[in-house]
Amino acid sequence: MKFDPFWWDIDEPIITETSSDGLLAEADFVVVGGGFTGLSAALTIARQGRSVVVLDSATPGFGASTRNGGICSGNIRPSHSALSKTYGPAFADEVYAEGIEARVDLAKFCSEEKIDCQLQMTGRFTGAMGQSDYDAQAREVESLNNISGHAAHMVPKSAQHTEIATDLFFGGMVREEIGGYHPGKFFAGLLRTAQSAGVVIYSDTTVKDVTDLTPSKKSVITDKGTIAAGKVIIATNAYTGTKERFGQFLRRRLVPVQSCIIVTEILG
Image (cartoon, rainbow, N blue to C red; front, side, top):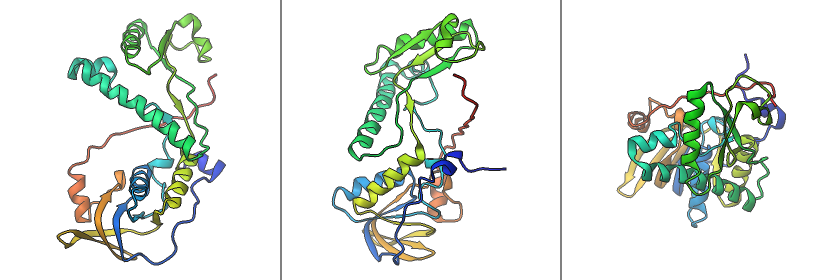
C-alpha cells in the first residue's frame, strides 16, 4: 500500500538542500517544525532582521504541508448561515471575509516571490443531494453574495452538466472565488524564499526538550546538540509528541480535526 501523495512522484518538489553545517549555538528565534506554519513564521521573522533557525525531525514539508489536496477555500466547515445562527451575522461575515483575505494574500505572495505552483481560481461546485439541500444552498448563496469578494450562484439540475459530467446531483452551488494549487511546488517555493531571507533550516533534527536557560532565553535540546534561543515557536501540528515536556503541555491544548482526501477520475 502506498501512503505518499502521487504528486511527489510526478514532481519531487520538496527536495531542497538544507543546512549541513553543525547546529548554530544561538539564534533570536528557533522554530520547531518546518511546514507551512513554521516556515511562514520564520520568513516573517527573518524579514524583520532577526536571526531564525528552523528545526525539523524529518524533511521540511514532509507532513500535511505537501500532503494536502491543494484546495484554496479559506473556509471552515460550518456554513455562513450556521455561523450566523450560532454567533451572529457580524461574526460570520468576519470569518468569511478572512477567508477571502487569505486567498488574496496567497496569490499576492506567489506573484511577488515568483512561485509557480499552478495557482488557479477555477471555482468549486458543491452538488445538492435533493430539493431541501438545494434550497439550503440557495440561502447560503444569498448570504455569501452579501459579503464583499464572494461570487456564488446556483446551478439547476438541468444545467449541471456545464459544471460536472454526472446526473447524480440535484443541481448545486458554484463558488467562483475558490480554486487550487500544487502544494508541493508551493512549499518548495516557500522553502527557497525563506532560505533566501536568511532562515537557517536543519532537517532530521529532533527536538528533545525546551528548557529555561536564563529568564530571557530558552535552551532547545536536540539530538544534534543544543541551541540557545530568545524565543521558541512550536509549529509541529499533528507531529507534536507526548514524550517531550513541551509536547505534553501542547497536546492538552490541541483539538484534533480530521480531514480526508478522495481522488477520482476526472468527472468533467
